[in-house]
Image (tube, rainbow, N blue to C red; front, side, top):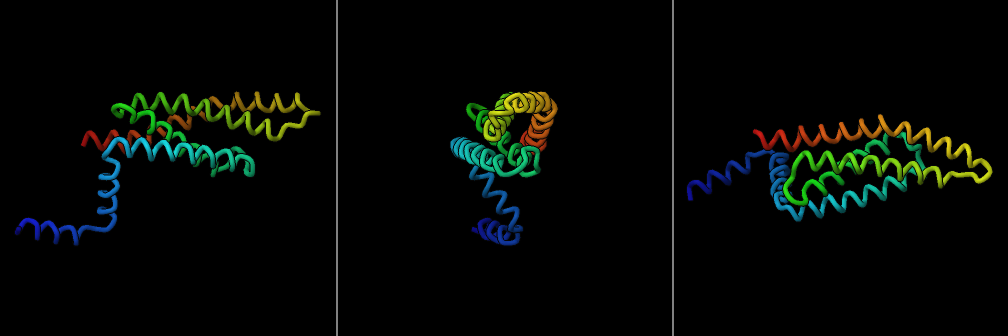
Length: 157
């Protein structure tokens, strides 16, 4: 009884942010919740990427932020299927980055294609595909580093 009073008093003193983080950690402690949240986030972010690509330049900051969030959601979904590992996360992010980039570029070219200038559309698409190498490598590196510093480092401590 005395320990419960001490525990309750300590919880009242605990900062609000720490309690919020503890609630989030307890919520995501169960694997089905992680899979559902990451899967829904991946689908919603993919939808937002295609909607924003129509209205905003493809190489804008909102697209970059949404793209990184999409890669993290896809990687989290596939990496949590059995037991989480950074290898599975990196593999899922690598494949998703290439597929997502090519899909968005192809969609952008097809939406804005002018049938009288099909050669310039093909040249533009080819140029963007060549540009995909450093863009995808940077996105993969950023997402894997983010997960390493947040999840894997926490497991070691």
